[in-house]
Image (tube, rainbow, N blue to C red; front, side, top):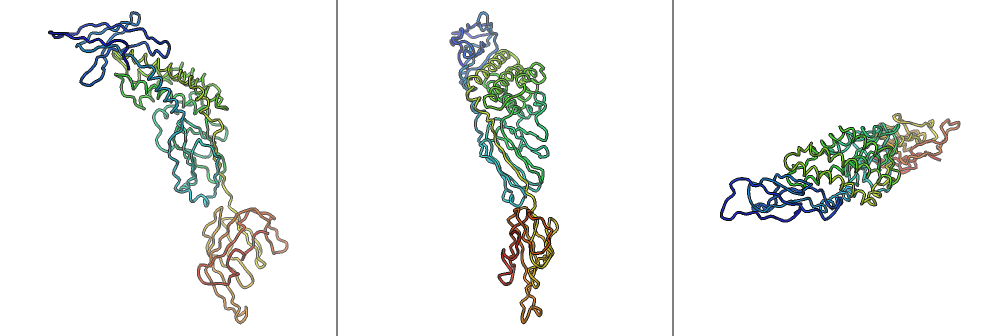
Length: 484
C-alpha cells in the first residue's frame, strides 16, 4: 500500500473531540493509465504511532467526485491509501518465473535398488532433466519412483495394467483441480494407457504388473497445463489478497473452495472448455499459448468468487473486490509480457523410462552319459553326470532368477585305487551356479538329439566346492559344456 495523496494532520488545540466528525478527502487522479495505474479505489487510513503503521477505517469513496468521506472517531494523521501497483506486478512477475522454474526436490529413495539384478527386470532411461528417478525393489515387486524436477505439473503415461500413486499428501488446491479436471477433459487416457499428473516437485510411484514390459513417458500435457494455469492464477490471487489490509489470512483450503465454487458457474466452465479445446502441446510455443489462454479465463473467474468464499464484507469489501479484479487483469498482463519465457517452459519432448521384464532362462548341460535335456522352472535336474564314475547328486534348488540359478548337491569322486571298479568313492558338498544367460547353439553329445538348435539358456555353469579338496578338473566353469 502507498499514499494516494497528502497526509492530513487533524488536531484540536485546547479542546477535545466529543463525537465523530465527518471528513472528506480529495483523491488525486492517477498519473498512470491502464494496468500500471492500479485499481481506481482507495482506503481511508490513519497512522497509529504506537504500532508504527497505517490502519484502515470505514469510508465511502465516490469515484465521480473523487472524494473519500467518513465519520471518524478521533483526530490524528489521516490519508487516502491505494495499492502500490508496481510492487504487486513485480511480485506477480517473480511468482510466474518461480512457477515455471526448476524444483529444488531431493531425489527419490530406493533402498531396494541393489536387488534389481535378481528381480527379473532391466530399467533404462533417456538423459532428460525433467525428473529424477530410481528403481526400487519392494515386497510387492519393482516400483519406479519418479520425482519431478519442475515446479509445474507434468504428466506420466504408462500401461493400463500398471498402477501409480503419488507419494505424500497432495495440497488442497491441486487436489481440487484434479477433482474438477474431468469436467473440462473427460478423456485423459488412450486405449491401453493410463495417465497420472505429477504436481510440481512431487513424487509419483509407478508399479508395473509383474512379467510385463513397457515405457513410462513424462512430459507436458494438456491436462498438466490446465492444472498449471489454475494453480498459478489461484496462488497469485492469494498472494495479492494476503497483502491487503483488513483481509483474512489466506489458506489453501479456502483457496480450494474458491476453485470449487468457480466450477459451479456454467459460464466459467464453458469459457475454460473453449480455451482448452483440443489442446495442442506438440511444441513449446503451442503449450505456452494454451497456458496463457487458460490463465486469462481462470484469473477472471476466480476473482469473482474470491470475496464470497473468504467472506469479504464491511467497508473494505468494495476495495478488496476491485483489487482482485484488477489483479486478474494484472495476471493476464504478466503472462503476456513473459510470453517468451512461457513459450519455452513446457518441454514437448519429455523423458521416458523403459522397463523390460526378463524371461527365466532354461537350464542345460551336456555330457556323454545321460540323455540331454532342457529344464524350465520349476523343474531342475536331480543328477549332473560328469562321466561314468563321477557326478553331482542335486539336493536342492536354491534360486532360479533371470540372471542366475543356484543348486546345492553332493559331488561323488571315484579315486580308482587300486582300480575304478573297487573305488573308493569320496564325496564333497558343492554349489552349482548357472549364469550368463543368452541365446546360443546348444552343445550336444547324443546322436539324434531332438533339442532345439538355439535356446535361451544359462551359458555358463560353475561348480564350487563347499568343503574338501576334490581334483581340479571336477570344479570350475569347464566341467560342463552348454553352448557350442
